[in-house]
Image (tube, rainbow, N blue to C red; front, top):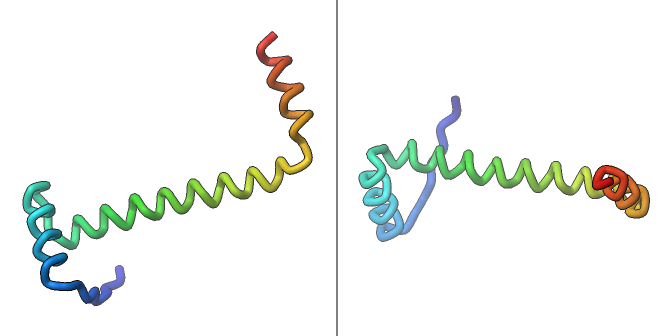
Length: 71
């Protein structure tokens, strides 16, 4: 596990503390949860872009398969 130092303005730190307290967790747990959500979004976007790249030029074939699947 790694440790990082994060410099935040005092008001932002205080607001994060209030949020963490309301959720019954530490600021560390809150930031870890936030990082997990951001990475999940990043991973989904990366997968989408890869699939989109693989599908370039195959629009008609995709529509044909969709029509076939719909009967």
